[in-house]
Length: 273
Image (tube, rainbow, N blue to C red; front, side, top):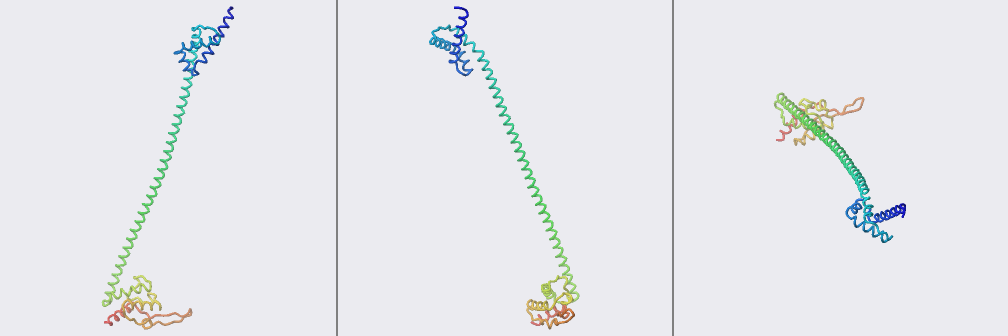
């Protein structure tokens, strides 16, 4: 057999061996390498048996083993590349996880900051409202106290003026019944809607205090009710009459003073008993 025929025969046999090995080895590079390193004799036997069964050629086991061992280094390189790729993918996955985690923490931190800012603003707003309420309440309390102080001062001044007025009345009219005067004064204030300070014993009901004929009638009625006496009627007491002028007619009252009313009431009361 020529050298060329011998080479071709070896080439075909090598092809057949590789095809058989491909069918026997697992697809996984790691698993294929493990089989070659730990189960090479079994593989060699199966390859030799398969080729002999199909072609009748009886191959040298060393020939098959050498072809099998040729695969070791490429498999190791492939495994290394696969490990490198897996490591890169794992690094990318971990980096992505880390980036996601970082983004989550940044987002949570921002949400926490926004929440804290909102809470701060809300708290400041509430505190401001409360402070304004307290300030308003304090101001209202201050105004109330000032008003009470002013009212107390006014009452005191009014009471002092009243006592002074009564003292003057007693000094001028030592025989006057002060109690009767005070009760009559109260009626005049009610009927004529006047301030207490405007009424004195010398005050003329019509001229000084502005009483008219209707006031006179009401005043007599209330005096009778208050003291349980019978007063002179309005004509007898006030001499109500009518006067005429260019603008029309109007009623007139006699100039009756408060002291005269007090004297009449005093006399009526004592005459009862």
